[in-house]
Image 1 (cartoon, rainbow, N blue to C red):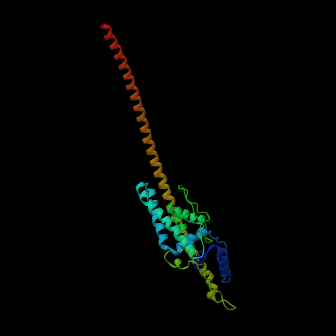
Image 2: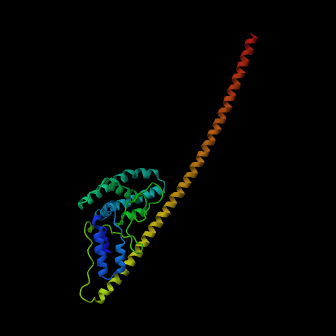
Image 3: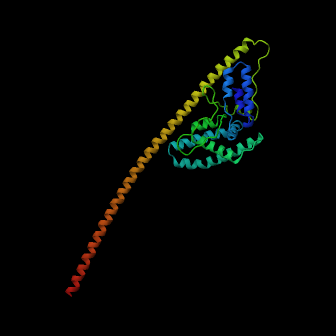
Length: 291
């Protein structure tokens, strides 16, 4: 797993060669399944790599994205307009800071982020702030493409993160060793030496496979829980929005009925006014004749 952590720390133009070395190392160690898993890993786009590099280099910003996103989603689920408005300046400032930091981190690796890539970094963070599942993907450190959020519905995460053969999302530990592998090449696994492998060497692939499968199961369960929470949050939002729409429709109906009542009263008053005016004119004429 440590080698894979390093793989997604290298720039995209070095990814294919680094992945090839890891495949060769896994085959040398006798881990054919692992070699196939590594071979299938997708190369990240430039913007995805920039986000991955930022997650490794700036754990503080990653934590702020996670925290701000949680508060925004909580306010949205409550339909708390005041809270959303108060968080907007913080959100906008955070987006600018993340894009600037990603550009700086890329520059430290000798790469320049074009305007399109910077926009994709911004779009990815917007999606992470809007969706818990998108946040987990964006901050995994193994993003393969940029994310986007249209303003409603779920964020499309298909083919957006590196997955193991078991379908588990790879993730770095923010604030831990993940922060030390930025811009480095993945370290090769220890190569077998001698003409005949020892029992320990023969057992190593099996142990690695067992450890990997256990980690995959744990990560899959974590992602499943995050997705379940995200679905539940969206359902709550839909229910609250439906309730608010129903109330608004009832208020609109009442207001329209009130308008009709007022208009009817105005029409009646106008008729009474005309009748009074006619009676007045007739009375006046009668008075003039009597004189």
